[in-house]
Length: 128
Image (cartoon, rainbow, N blue to C red; front, side):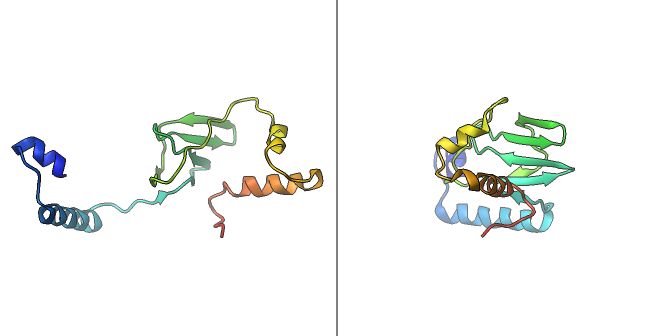
């Protein structure tokens, strides 16, 4: 806000003016705005599953029963904290066996580990 005002009249807004404006805008949003659910990394919507990539383009991976795709038009809202790192871009035709080159899991426990990894992307279960 300080920068925006400075560009219009040649000087920046005072700290108290900025606090007052933020307080007023917060009240308008809280009482006059529509409440919307905001998600951090995963969300479900109309039978689809959405994974926020957290990249600069704010893209999501849309997972449907028919397949998946990367899109920048998400039907749900996500919040990106400054500490969130982007997920790698998935590729079609990848080989899941390559995962085990990076994760030290005994062969007999890999199915359980894979189930846990996949379950961590489900929105209806909260992880501790």
